[in-house]
Length: 213
Image (cartoon, rainbow, N blue to C red):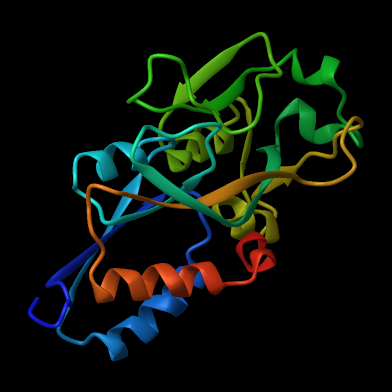
């Protein structure tokens, strides 16, 4: 610490955020700061802010929020594409184009945060029947078993779409992918050392379109 380099950097990454650009930064981090310990925490939607507030994490990558608690700083770094999906045997998979009225007939599976009384969700409610889960992987398992449809981040469903184990729906009311902003977040309560500042600066430099891939 005498040189301003901390012993440890802890990064909280919301499930569903594209890991590829993060891993590229961490590869370079290992060369730049070989003696600094690194911890990567995975969080549900909206729970990254809680870890930052508690001092459990140094930096956070999370879905953008309309507002942050006092003392929080953030920088938009990119966008995550949300993909509407259902199981290949689900009735919605048989439709060439899916309308709002079609979605309302079947259960929607929605991400929610355990740290909020009001559900924090990815996308918007479109169905009359809702199930909630805080982990996109759990929602994915429910979708694969035909228990509903969902809008999930592309990195979560990419390989299953490629292998035709999951069906991607084509909305009549939406011409392109829905996008959720990704914010890099930190707090004024925790002063970043040189290692944390380095990670922060490298994540900000990543081209925004890379996060959607």
